[in-house]
Image 1 (tube, one colour):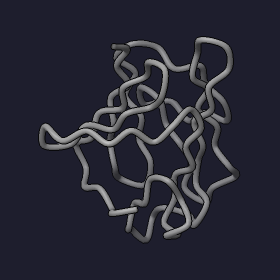
Image 2 (cartoon, one colour):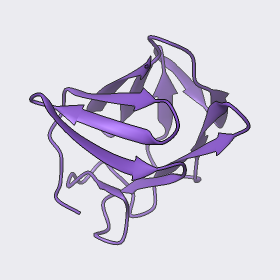
Image 3 (cartoon, helix red, strand yellow):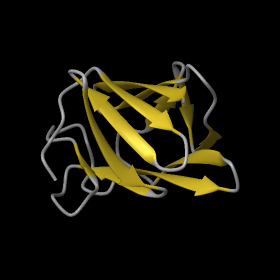
Length: 103
């Protein structure tokens, strides 16, 4: 997948959609995030682990999981291991910031 730059919105509905510069890319219900090109969402930065985090759909909710990354995953400024995403949550991964929006 093409790497994204900071300032990305994550939109949860039936599948996760990433919005950047008014472009949308649907990735599915479960998304891997990391520096490795094998991820669904590639974040090319040294502070991002190869397999950094995942967002998984469970019933009608999205769960963000830190995959034991070196630099952690933060939601609204707090380090998390696992977090159920809510409207407006700000996610930080290795210097990249995202906002979770329900559509």
